[in-house]
Length: 431
Ligand SMILES: Cc1cc2nc3c(=O)[nH]c(=O)nc-3n(C[C@H](O)[C@H](O)[C@H](O)COP(=O)(O)O)c2cc1C
Image (cartoon, rainbow, N blue to C red; front, top):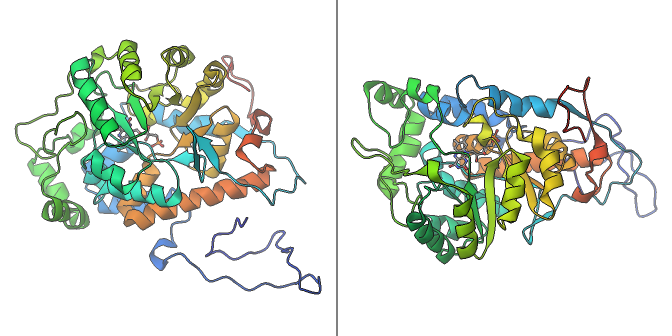
């Protein structure tokens, strides 16, 4: 398996390639390979590189909506810091030439141990954002989750990616939940994700400062912001209006929600603070496919999820966008993995590199999701951009597996990581 992207040359350190001639004589040189990556995508060398282009193109309010978190950004910072607190203990001389990162999740075999999590309003950020993400994920054979707060009909997204999952934002109201579950099932979805960490809207002060709200309200500040970002105005907003009409919140309920731009309509998010485990049990009885709860951090909640018959949990603090100072999911992951007892454990928040993917897997996750960078990639370069981002991360995982001395995801075990520095006084989650 090649770890070298088609556009890269094999160089320097340890570059002797084990090729042989028919006479079994080692070759000292090999032909430089031609780049298969389109020129405009070659400058993106890591997931972080997409944000810069996206930031230039997006109105300030939309860039802030994606990049931002809440209040002091403490939860957002901890998502990165937790990964930085671990280092690797690689193994050597393992003959890793047969390595592969294919991962089986809920009976599906994916090409990589990572996927794309749900993004509300993705089609407001990038032209046809949900379809772009869905198609790129399908092409790469990784999972993609469609958000309840999306702007393209869930039936259309499922057609673009017949393996997409659906994520719900629910009010604690059986009369709204049941018809939605039936609609998602009728559209052919196999996996239903309930996001659990949004009982009330969080305190996103940066959205208030920039004037971002959905449905959008055109104020003089918003009009100026949009007018000074013509790439987005013409390439996303006007193009959407021309080709598809005014986008609506299509997938919050069984029926269509309000338009994304409105003077007097708001979304009826209902009694989200009444949502409780009894509603998860209700969905469990009605939903025949896989059921996932996203947005829990406490090991006790993972246990309750298992007792409710949930198939998988996504350990997540919503990318630091809900309760500020919530600890990184990586910190409770080992305890949750110990509590899982057959239930699938996934994680998101702050995963940016192949090394992060492997750290999370070593600490007990079976799968991870990577958020903001894939949405920035959609903004920066559409479907090819997301494909490029997926390939970059996949190549990193592959290269890192080789350097770590493992051949399969099953070989990524806790002994390959160490916590750096002195043990914290509360270090129960050290493997
Ligand atoms: C712009 C944006 C919109 C999001 N919308 C949703 C959503 O509709 N539903 C949901 O469960 N999570 C949503 N999330 C959270 C992501 O699914 C994911 O948990 C988070 O982005 C992971 O953190 P990361 O961005 O650091 O990788 C959103 C995140 C962003 C950045």
